[in-house]
Amino acid sequence: SAALLNLTKKRLLFSNDALSLDVILGDNVRYNFDYFLDKGFYWSIGLRSRYNEFHKNIIAGLILSPDQIEQTGLNKLDIELSDWTHQFFLQTLFRRDFALSLGLEQKHLKIISETFVEDQDKETTFENSDFLSAFGQLKFDTFDNKYFPGKGFLFDGDFHWYLSSSDFNNNFSPFSIAKANIGYAFKPATNFSVTLGSQGGFKIGEDSNNSLNFALGGYGNDLINNFIPFWGYDFISITGNSFVKGYINLDYQWLKNHHMLFSANYSNTGDDIFENGEWITNPDFSGYGIGYAIETLIGPVEARYSWSPETGRAIWFFNLGFWF
Image (cartoon, rainbow, N blue to C red; front, side, top):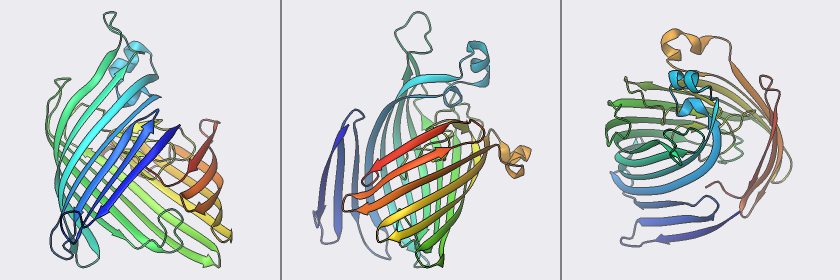
């Protein structure tokens, strides 16, 4: 359970700026802060800050090395993760349609667990580092609806170059992470829409830290870091330093603002899949979802049932209101 507080203020310091602050008070405290000074086709200025925390049982591969997993015999860990990230960026319109952002990011990431105990300590700290990175983002979005697109095209690319770290584990070396999401929505018939898409990402460099690797599973539009939604699996169930994912969403709007939904996704995820050719083999992971959603004043209200042939498990996902 949680309570959402929102503050939005336009023309705070200038006639063309805007400030937004969202705070969640509850089991998992978090906030999003955004300030943007809009200069149109010139370089606009942005500040962004967010804090997220959660407590969850996750696959051990996001934290432990293959040798540690083999030595301990652990497949999953119960962790507490906190992420505090700040960004300063400049943004302009590239060729009048693409939003191009260039900036700097400071991130503090902490991961602890009581599952993996050394020297009789109460808890084990797997990560407690500050990361400094330069980043670039390129986005083109003509979707007519963020949550239930009926037509349009989406390209969302992101590149982070991690330059330095306080290096809690003494294993940091500079590395980069690139990822992209491409989607196309169209209506083959009245009130029926199809969205086809593909995602992918990879790490460049020899850094052995896994905490910023890709982790697939769960459902959501605003997941942090390199967490990627994937039907049929719980959050952070599939991990690796590279991945490819294809998906299709079917949406039948039989009444205004009422949606009957079907989704399917497929992925290859692991370490160095673009180097060993695994990315073009038959998918190792697949999942499907059916659901019902209603568009309301507070955002989409959804119930989704998902399953995966590989696990034989079914998972329900519920959403009430706008994603945050």
